[in-house]
Length: 111
Image (cartoon, helix red, strand yellow):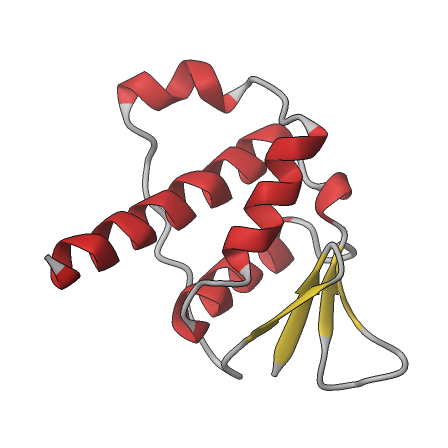
């Protein structure tokens, strides 16, 4: 099931669970710093590069906290859209960390 974040499309598994992690101490200060438009654009692009399982975890976590932000596309019922501008700063920063951790783990496996 694809999802759309700021117009980009990514794959989403039908079922997944959120693996919520507590932020590291160094990230707590950054957690409350609002994201710029450029950071949101980059987050959106990077989320669409995530493996389906990770996208599913992100969608599940977002939907639990902000049910009205995750919507099915009326034109394509298999596509899910996320209004990234409606998410609060801590949620955006959590997504940012999740994306960074996923890419870091992927690089370690390739090395």
